Image (tube, rainbow, N blue to C red):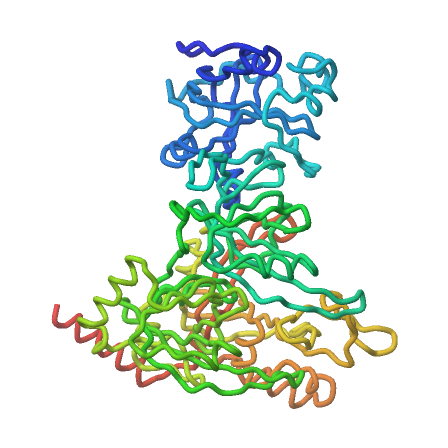
Length: 616
């Protein structure tokens, strides 16, 4: 038992007695359970369960309470005094939550006083007539709510995992008006009344589509405040309307937009939800731009881009070292694209190529030596690492951020005369400087396995020198959609055409893509690796369409192609990451890069190591 007395039965009083409901603070409760980390969800990570020794219920920490929680995590059994709080009922599901704005810790490390306390939601599901403000359960939670209520369409709203049930609301007194403002970071579908004050940090063009179901228009923007950034989308007539209203860089009040799960394939933002703007959405321009940042970056240094996952999106800051002429590309479908490559460098002494597309490629006119910040640029790993601008990427010249000033000072003083290590391997070649770095960072198969590389949240990268001992020739490729940027598996129809469910169309023939499995060995052990299309094509020297054709028409040529690489040594750059398969956790190893051994560089590296050993 604890020597600190809990406010027993207080949760029942808060929702059944008007006086306590109006003044719910200063209760003493015990932490019943916590879930600080929940896949990066900004709401769920601040969700806890608390107990008054008779009942336990959900509580969402926000504002000062959220800051305290992130700095010093509460543990099961800790006893707190809630200083500022607000009771909430989720309207449709009749779930009960305390929104805690501030608290103090009275005692840590205590035993749980009553592990069999009753869940408050369960109690009120059978005693709805007791809820303050209503004669019955329906009226109590819908017609005469005792608190700010929020609605949800989540069928799992009762679970602790999914109960991210409120927004952090702050007060704003602007030059136009005073209104409650919700933080973007805290927006979730559990709210039905909110307003954000945010800047349009990105404005896309109106896009059109045509398919068997009809045609339509799409428009999207990103809204930014001090807490985070969220994507908003409008369709058809609303796309035209909001495209005319919203201007990039301006600040707006936004309310009455629908919140729905984010679609990561279309957005580079981390927010778990996005806004859908419809006829009910209200947008008003805000003249007071105070406390609204112009943009938000999570810069990644160029020396760590090599460890970023392919097709991930990142923010980078660099100095333009080279601007190449623009040229034209033609896709497999015959569509023409404008392209320009620029090279940027930073103070880690690395350089990387950035691909610009279409109008941005043709209109680009920044001089070499300019500072650029690129938000939401996509990482490519074909022939080394490079970057590519996407439809939601933003390139900002000479950004007004402290990091840009520091980088400019470094470049003018020393950087312009420095030598840089390129992350791009032009034509499959690798510089001697890059190879020496690659060799120096090698490990062995046995050590990589013993060190449990891949157990970290984002996985691990490592390099080995190993020989291919076996290549699986069954299911080395799959039939993929031939549309640009799709690559989804297609199924053969009875009439011989191929169906892509994602693109919702039939195709005469698929585009085969590799998913190749090989075994490698070194002097310490063996490891199975997966190679995707680009890396397998680099290894075998033919694309998956050609190898599939050889398998079906020329068995000897197929055998020669697949066996010629066996027992040959290569340098492998490998990504290790945990994977769940048949309810078992294992480490999956994929090849992010590979190249043939350069024996001269190998010998030079070993000679340098021997010389260093003799000197010391």
